[in-house]
Image (cartoon, rainbow, N blue to C red; front, side, top):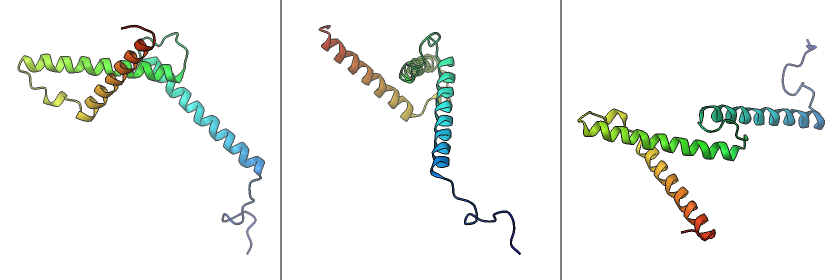
Length: 122
């Protein structure tokens, strides 16, 4: 009646601490590799990232700047179309996106002003 192969979790041999540690290390390596690949993909589509180091902070900052520029450009196109009498209601971005863009732009301006003040610039 007894089976040779384990049939439930209680019958399986427990992992040793070394095996658990090795599994954790492999999982963490996979996670970091997935993050690196994601940043590489992101850097490949953001203009100006060619030849830059792959610092995650640099990639994120460049991506934020690029997205903000594209949102502002889109808003200008929508305003121009609206001025020409074109119905642009289907083109509008969600208010939350626009608010986040405005808030991020203000943070950047504040940081630049603070840096200029620290450097004695007006």
